[in-house]
Length: 433
Image (tube, rainbow, N blue to C red):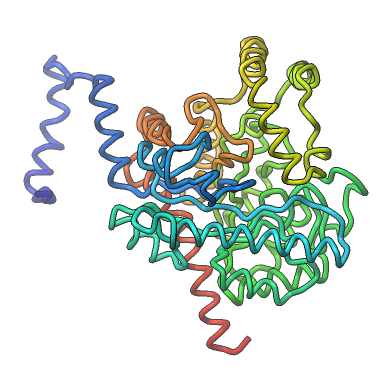
């Protein structure tokens, strides 16, 4: 049973403590590694570890790729259980493509198929293991039952096309955040990493994008700033009446990537009340030197890996054949990558927590969380899949983070933002705006 100290006992402790230092008495023994691990494990079990970004690709949610059982994915339900990861946000992702009526019909169909897969897993394939959360309070309720929790999300507002009504349609399917862009400008906003075209098209949000943000505020969908340009971030800060998230980003001060948030933007995030979810993707945690990137490109070319643009153009049959061929050369690729990494070590678990340290020191522990990008490129030494989530807690404990801080980082901050987004939406709907 936990009881608070009576004042007289606390006073006695405070008076006696200095006597140990003055009397030459031995200080309490340092915590052993076994004790630290046990303490971290106990904290990990009490908090709600939550990952705001995993990708669901290809045949995810079918008997061919069933996340209810063991898979080669970085996130499936057995790995979540093994790592004590209680919540994931499966992202409905569609890569940036043409902005034509025909393309919009195709990407909408793809998005709806992925939403159907999330519902199929949770409602038909293994409802005894996982449940979909639609409100922040649902997360804690479901987690308390022992089930894992899914929260649907959208990566790339391209799936809206130019149709504002799609925001409500996706909300009704469970989408609780929308990443406004991906690797390319769209009708909503400018991307931080356009692969073609001008560096900026809208200089931030487009007029349509402003309406999208307002509609997300009205419905209760979190605005996600990962992948968007700096000017888009600034425009969202100026416009959004609810706090926002960066679902899988890093600190630019530690890794100079346009995908990461600068200290200036992090200060804006604090003023907004939002949260940045630290990504477990090595190149956003530690910038690759040019030599490493060139060496990896050479290795991939030697093994016949297609570039992303080519893969995007594949039919589903092409993809299946390509995946089978890549599986056959994967051991060679992994061996070659290990040789490269020995020369240029990539970001790892300690680097990820360095980013958490940076945000805590700059704007406070209330504004940082974790969003891995597993199965979308994420995975680092020490935290390479969901089964290794405990390692994050261990490293936080090792660095002196308290249980209260760890609870905030793993889920408390994100749930606070989500609840405020819900509060703003409720007020707008009550006012009829």
